[in-house]
Image (cartoon, rainbow, N blue to C red; front, side, top):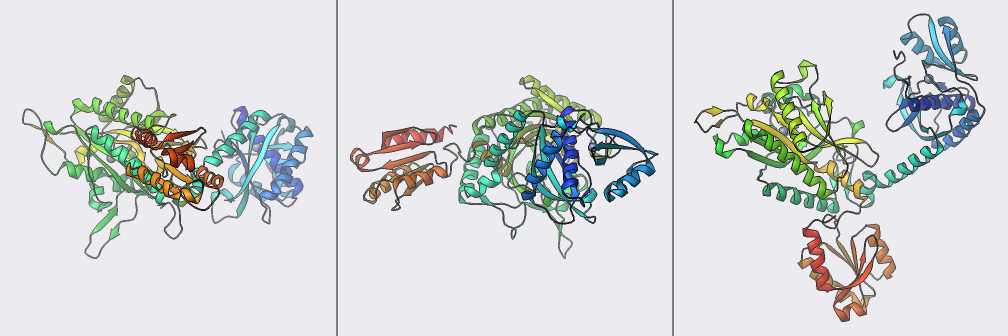
Length: 589
Ligand SMILES: [Zn+2]
Ligand SMILES: [Zn+2]
């Protein structure tokens, strides 16, 4: 019974350790800043560690953390026991009043029923807490304070703004070291940082948060991704279409989105004549309307309508992150209309396509979640039996393909269950990259039908599927996956041609022209810079090939190739053109 909400560690030893370190932090802070008031200090799972919120009465910064941390170490070495006591209510109030700890007094008033108040003492420090805790401060051997941010008391922006100090704590110094190294590496790979350094995308307040701008090099990568995706889908029998970003609000009333998905939708645009247009949160209704542009027969099915379509979803500004969480994104979307008999093959085909994209793009680590409905009846469209049928179909498809999965109850779409492909960013934060969903509801709501073999009218089943996910999210993933060193086929600059001296610039131009003729993306570096400078600049951009040209290359019609990741060799120009075009065409990693 967690009486103080987030101030409670459960019985996981690591969480207990982290929560105890939060107490140690508050103990150190109250020694160094006797006027500081401490609020709450839970252990947290992501990022792994803890925080404590304080009112310092004046601003403190990250520069103050080393002093606090060294006081924590001193207290840890002093071997001070964590002592649990249950104080009579009046005594607890008197203790916290004596210490001037108003936040704790408020918590006692609001959250503690009955007479006994559970507290923990470490030396002079006293905290309102249910525990459990480690035995002694001596058990806290591996911790580090990390950063400072703002937080409101009880998450309420009308209440005082507090200073939140974040830290991490581990059972051994070795674990702490490994974690800090991992963080350092993740920081280097962070797509927001690399996106800026490599000039791939920009976010500007004048355009708005969550509306990133694709710079030329980022747009090149996106174009390559889209070509790859569309070509593969066409080869697999999908029909690619183009539909508008807006539609009449009524369309989303019919689909149920206006009722069940409203929290993610933008307010409608209302016009004088009563017209109401809505930025689309999904592509499904548009594709349904395309299905209905003609009477379909069983011979037309399965009909796979695909589009890299822009969707608009309102995300609160606090949750936006670079390209990973945005307010408008282009989804690699498709809607498959099929007969119930074709359903299993279509689900399998969609999983197979997602697997193929993952393999080519280098998404090596992912797991499947079978997202099902829970018991909250108002959240879901349609009857239980259809849901069971659809859930069984998805599970069976995964099993038939030899894939294991976990069930996520309550994670389904409102119109049906789905398979989610869960992947991780550089910080090991999990997100859904693509989905396969079975839907019996929208065909009903839109009265979809096809002419069956016997001439009767029947209702098709619908599969919503994203195979490569949203372009923005996929891009953020790929930036972190490759730390900017994209495979040649994706890299915005595939080759830099660098002349050794100005006198070889003509030949550098000729090499560049040959490569461009073969549709290779080339930059020709004929600046009057030293060669090592040119090479260094190209390496900063993680360019796959640097072709150096000097006297001997001119003489033999060749290039001196400097490969990313090491290796240098002289190659005839025509052989290089041939090998790089093959590498690009095969989209080698
Ligand atoms: Zn505690
Ligand atoms: Zn859909």
